Amino acid sequence: MLDDLDELRTFQSILARGSLSAAGRDLGVSLAVVSKRLASLERRVGHRLIHRTTRRLSATDEGAALLPHLDRMLEALEAAEARLVQGRDEPVGVLRVSAPIALGRLHVAPVLADLVAVHPRLDAELRLSDGFIDLLESRIDVAVRIGPARDSTFVMRKLADSRRILVASPTYLDRRGRPATLDDLKSHYALRTLGWTALWRLTGPRGEVAEIDQPSRLRTDNGEVVHDWALNGHGVMLKSEIDVGADLRAGRLERVLPGWQSPDAPIYALLPSSAHVPTKVRLFLTRLEAALDAAG
Image: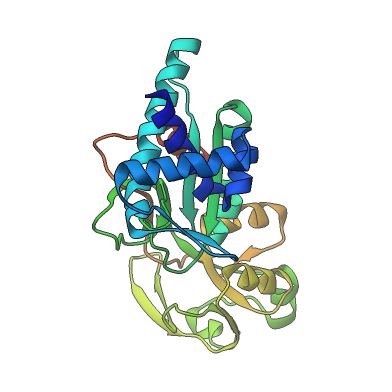
């Protein structure tokens, strides 16, 4: 049984570290031992689990199917050991999180850093992307998203509400004027993220809805670039309030047409299953929910 666990941990480490030699260094054994353990595991299961070439290494279909089950099993063993040694439910293993770029950098990344600092047996990996990411293929434990849920195979847990507001730098508004009405806004330039609709859909102070086709001369596929353009005085952007709160408080950005905003959209977590939520995920979600509440 112990030999079996060594083989499974070796297989997991090879894929995590990207090579047999790196796995050997991680586990404190020689390359020969790593190769022997992998060969023994592949012989036992009757399948090749890893594709090996001179340049790269990847899981076979059978290896990729085995890995999520293996991750959960080894994590459960480590958690049980931690409970015996420390007398408490301690997070162990690697916590893999996916998040949008701005929300992830400002709010998710600090939470992960704090968790890793407090829990020595926990590692964290954060993937930042405003585009689509295959959560199963990337072995994501929890994905943080804004807006309507699109992945029906995952369980959704709401963390906070988000709304987008119009903001610009004080220097830009000093130069171009501060809009008092939606019609005034039409003489200003929009800073846009590619992929979003060309119309800004806004709700007014009395619940009225307006769709603004705002002229734009600067567009990008990266929300952080839009943010930088706004800070540097190049136009007005529609951005999540939770992402610009620090800039508003510091006076780097200023609210434009304060009575208008986008409809509320949830910030939520996507989980593979609600049947068994690992300790590492539960702790992360609790801390992130508190951080988002404080930021709002």
